Length: 276
Image (tube, rainbow, N blue to C red; front, side, top):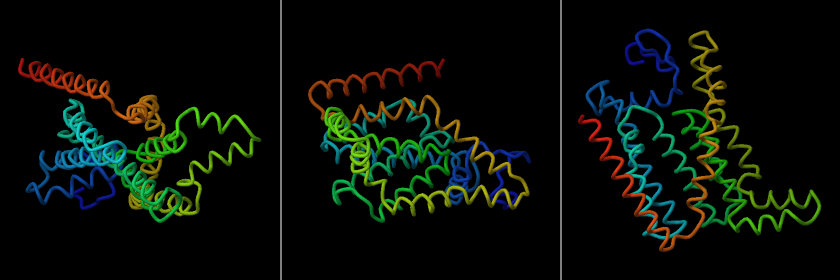
């Protein structure tokens, strides 16, 4: 991109390289003024900054859900997880996606607590954050926040309360209760947010297709969807929700300590293996 000055057509040695959306490549280009040009540091810098941001966002989110101690412990766990540290210093878009998803969840939690949920201009901002996140790795930036927020909205009072509401009344009454629990989504701001967020996400692909006279970029944006909705993603979201759905007690603190110990042991084994 830097050589050709065409920032909508990624290539490596003259060959098209559309492995990720354009946003991940743009972040590397934005880093070049701070690293003295396109080099290894420029490719790693976006992930490193995103890693620090993700830890801070997680601390803020968990602090709002529970308390300051739990928030700090959550940040320590994330910051000492081997894979997280590995990808935070690697030239990949995974950590940038995590940071964007955490920003979306924090925005929802703030508006639910301060403004009581429901619609508002913040919904449009939420879709813009998800669109920007999706431009780094793919539509997972939309899928996971929507799935997590929807699960939280339905289950914030517990499974028993949800089943009680859905086990009585007519079908229309049950649907209305589900809609009432998800007023953050079922409002006119969501229509605007979807339109603007979808436009922001798709525009770079369309510009790329029109400039280069091919639909390869547009086809990639659709084909990538099947990868984003993978089994791993389906399993990850409920697991994250389950781990943050219960107030911490002594057993949770001990579990956190064991997790920190396992993280340290794994990192030590990896370092010894690398040295050998």
